[in-house]
Amino acid sequence: MSSDEIVIDVRGVSKRYDVYENPRDRLKQIVVPRLIQTANKIGLARHAQPPIYHREFWALQELSFQVRPGETLGIIGRNGSGKSTLLQIIAGTLAPTHGEVTVTGRVAALLELGSGFNPEFTGRENVLLNARILGLSRDQIAERYDQIAAFADIGDFIDQPVKTYSSGMFVRLAFAVQAHIDASIVIIDEALAVGDVFFRQKCYARLEDIRASGAAVLLVSHAMTDIEQFCDRAILLDHGKMLFAGDASEAAKRYYQLHQTASRAVFDAPAVASPAIVAGDDIGEIDSWPDDSQFVSAEGVVQVGNGWARCTRFAVCNAAGVRSPSFEQGEEARFYSEFVVAEPMGVPLTGIVLQNDRGLNVHGKGSLEYAVAAPHRLEAGTVIRCRQTVKLQLELGEYTFELGLATIDAATYAAMSTLNHEQIFSRIVRVCHLPKAGFLAVGWRRTHNGPPLTHHGLADLPGSVYFDFNRTS
Image (tube, rainbow, N blue to C red; front, side, top):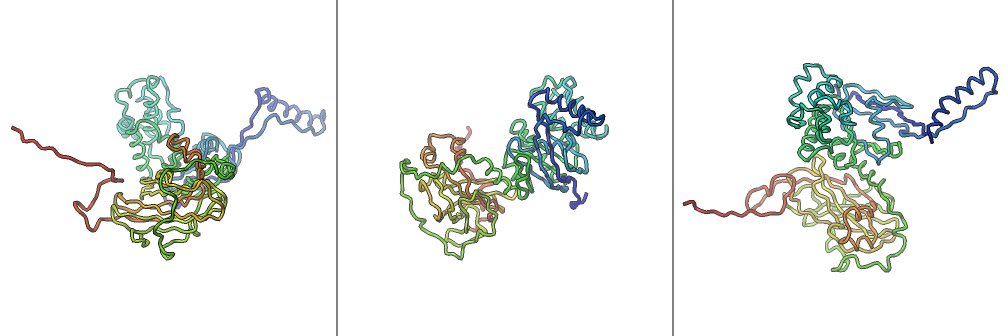
């Protein structure tokens, strides 16, 4: 199948539901319009308009997009945004009110896992039945049965009735069947979150195999790390409308914007009586700042924000303050960024995120985690300059980096030690985010005491090794 061929073509799709206040209204909507129509025909009524006993709810409104072979498309949005409705329409289990959907190829839909299982049948019988329903021949089922059973890893329970399974065993077997039918289109709705850590690792590995095979994948998840790691593109839905379609990382940042609950009023009043933010050093100037030639303008870089501030420029430099695209393993990188405040805001929070070539977040940290001393409030027109240093104790390879500015109220910032993560996180307002600011490379150390590599794997975790030797008698 050519990569130019379209396997999923969604054109102007809308889905409407008629919502009734009570069951009697549903019956009236069926009967009364027909009675009025008949009365109009025989002359008992003069073009009377039938009453409407329901209100319309549009779950989807005018969605259009295309997916090609080998592409992974993320579909994200808050609960009730229309994600599951869209997947059901693509899978063919729900008809759109308006628009058309063209799907080319066999579809494996991991929506309601196990929905086709008979609880009275054994796991083995359900595998055979479900695989047959999904379009596999008897020979194909026989060839893949051992792989499915091994993937589910439920032992002798495979020959017991499904009604005796735990919920985890049930989902594992259902996922195993769907993941082994060699579909050209795979639809996944939160299914990667099933089972224990070992089974989830198998699920992620299987997803990589499916992507490598050239299948088109639609992935719905509330875990933005999954969206950024696995998806080439993503669409963001809200109240049935498509707010954004494009780069998965940018879509994830726009998704976070939807969840911001702090209002403008939180930051409007000057925090005269606010407690000190952090005990210790006074807020001071950065002791070293590169000259203008080392900076990159941020004007041409995608910025996702709420309009309270904008990034003007940034730089990634070595310890000498010289812009550098490559570093030795373990070398210090210095990230400089500059923002201009357009609206009054509270305590500024800046930070960076590093992603490897597989889309994994390998490092994310900023002024919040360092508990940096900062003003309680910034006025419009303030220029924020930030320098953040990172020792690149990472595996060799190329990385992209993200830059961001957020804000939080002074009272919450001062009380962080008494709050849990959710309490702090819910009060943060994302102001300006550069999802793909730039890239850097980590290479071999030119000079080293010991081996050239400091470690193996993603990160270098602090630790130590000790020996103790005793001679045997």
